[in-house]
Length: 302
Image 1 (cartoon, rainbow, N blue to C red):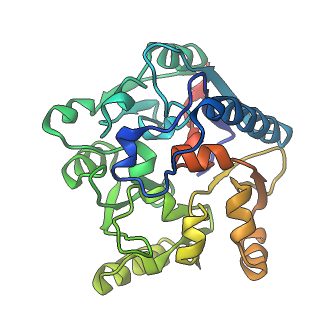
Image 2 (tube, rainbow, N blue to C red):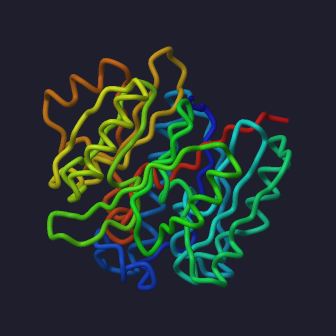
């Protein structure tokens, strides 16, 4: 199940976030004064590209107050489901909790039919976190929630989501090439309609690795592996969405695309049109890439 509608938040004060850098090894502090200007240009170029391909991009402008440097990554705090449910999630960084802004929720309720809202953010009081479709990579066809545990992805909250939605959790632990835990599942893997792109080498436990591979195979999707080096270039941070054509789009950053080998591009191109946009400033300062910027909307339009 893929969608043609995505929510994106246009940045007004994007910068390096020290509160998230404590467990996001992908972040690198750049020139703060230029970060917002460059990120905004990257954002607008990306949105234009997606719209030119027929994606219905719903852009909501961020607000200066409260300051939310990571607002450009909405998929971490909100998700939308085809039964009309909106989920809100508990966030690790205190300044990311302010991203749950009324302006965004008002836009969604005005544009789409929302049947119910499930708010899991109360888990923040217990220091338990689940950062949306960053923490979980959802196979919406097979109803599987893939999740690598980390300080931002807690098994208790994951189970609460699964109990509410009928998803089956597939839990594992992932590390980067240096052996450091990976903060979000959506940098490790991407679930498309017919393929799963994953850095399988990032799962050090043999039993967990076998279980993840078996789960993917049982779901009927083909396994496409990426390397640690490609993971570091955000090649796992892809999202498949609908455009104007019958062939769906597989969206990624230009950094991710350039890291792919010819054979991988050929394999992925069997079922998707590969689309990429330069997101260097957003990737280095924010530690997230193309997929993190897009919150898929499966609600019915008003």
